[in-house]
Image (tube, rainbow, N blue to C red; front, top):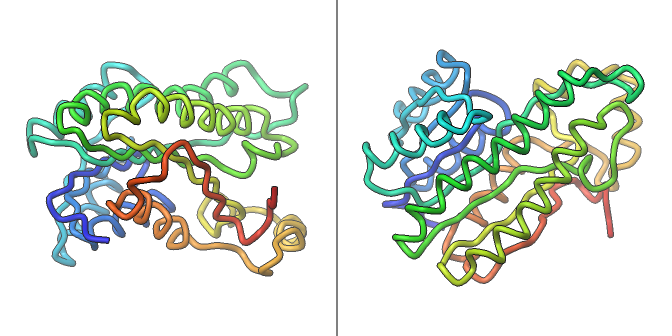
Length: 247
């Protein structure tokens, strides 16, 4: 799965799953744009990729804002002249049970996790159409399929990504652009490590393979969907969850 000459944007890639995805794409030849609000973290990730012989540039942009999402794509095009792969990974959590959830926390999660993917995709499809080739990969979650108590905002946003994926896939299939989603399960990241041991064990009980996934597991799936080998796959949701959700 060679990605030489391809240019990829990975949002929310200063750490965690996004960092693993960006690193994996770069390892296979893609020039990778590290996007995050954490400028220091984004540059550190880009520097790590370059130190390993890859090509990477850090661009700080708030993808929940239309002008910022457009700037992210515009700067990529100005620097490299093309955009082949967009991974909508940026996401935040503001967990609370519904009766306690503030409107502000609802809006912040939906704006970043769902609206941001819409804005970036809208900006990215223009150069992809001109090229006649593109890959958009949305990082959803099993929470968006099965729900999760205390995460009404997060689950709603991740479920929305699935609808966005299928709709954009239908709209641009004839233009050489595939659009797919990945729904990770319980992945060992900075987001899940603070959970209590009891909560972790409850999750593990639901996973047939018996252990938590790694960011690398998600990155491998993204690599495949971003490649030419996945040219006949679009509008699909790939569950990377150790069998947690079988449907």
